[in-house]
Image 1 (cartoon, protein in one colour):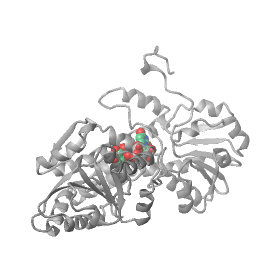
Image 2 (image 1 turned 120 degrees about the vertical axis):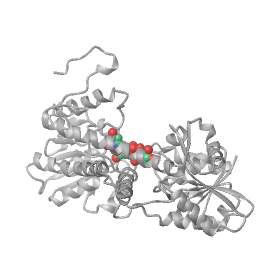
Image 3 (image 1 turned 135 degrees about the vertical axis):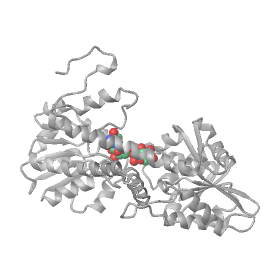
Length: 453
Ligand code: UDX
């Protein structure tokens, strides 16, 4: 059992790791500057919507191994490990804003006890070279005799599955200039039984950016293929199934639709491109990945406009606001650009999202928030599906047809069964489904080959 301080303990990554490390038996103090969040967390209330998080939080508090504080003098001195989990947002040019990291490194350095060794773990996603920067800031501020090592240990959590990903990691990546420090951090995660990659700090930092850039590239790739499919009469779901069966390609992250949003992919691909630019390189693939992704949103609005002969005065129901299902997170959500485009063209927008409406109402006062998908669809000329919440696939489309004014469903996530929609007398269009109505065959499940002509 180790004594751990988590700096940035009320944020997404910090809170996830604070609760998980306490669950693994460590003694965790989470430090955060947000006094209201710290107070709520100590009462067992999570400021973040994440399956299982509040339950784990309460268990940690109940065990006495987890607590939250705003007092750095209480949280930092004497801990064997200090995790840096503060925010690293993007500046407008794609560069990473390192102010919180710098300030946290100074706060930590000033409080490390002499005659004690502390390992600082860089958990937030930080540009290549950040472990060197943190090392330098610590060195400038520590008192004589305090010994400190910095280990780069990127996280690979998905929102909505953060705890699952913490407890079942594919790999633990540790970058250190001091192997003992890396092994000490590896020991914290030993109960998870995951493969451990120990490397230099810059390579570990780069693993995080390269992983996110690769996944984002897969998404933009399949979205570009989807456009060609749509133009030439092929079905992207079948194509994804066909290429995904090749283990060199793999089936995941090949869902065409409205592309990626969230706090990671857009920011990290942008930051990697910025770092490449700054190094005098020409990151053309990364730029294309981002361009394709943003184009999807414009194309989707244009498709609605074409299908409805103009958007001025039309009532549009938008199903889904969060950047993906099972989260209330709106950061970089395609819904923001899609709704912006609809409103610009004079449409009246009514939206429904199972989790994100409270946040969305503050950001988009011109949009009416509806109580459920049916209320959003009432009197609408079209329904636009923007987030692939499972709930939408289970909707009664006969009832929907009865309440709409028009008959168009634009499925921006290829979520629905086209036959369930057209069977209810509605028009359906997915993304990249040149053969509208085609459903993927059972060819890969071992069933007899079904002709798809
Ligand atoms: C991602 C990475 O998966 C995670 O490893 C990293 O630590 C943070 O970034 P997250 O942003 O939570 O996690 O979501 P993810 O499930 O990866 O989806 C990202 C976006 O891509 C979502 O907007 C999703 O809708 C979209 N997406 C995903 C697609 O459009 N198609 C796909 O096939 C997969």
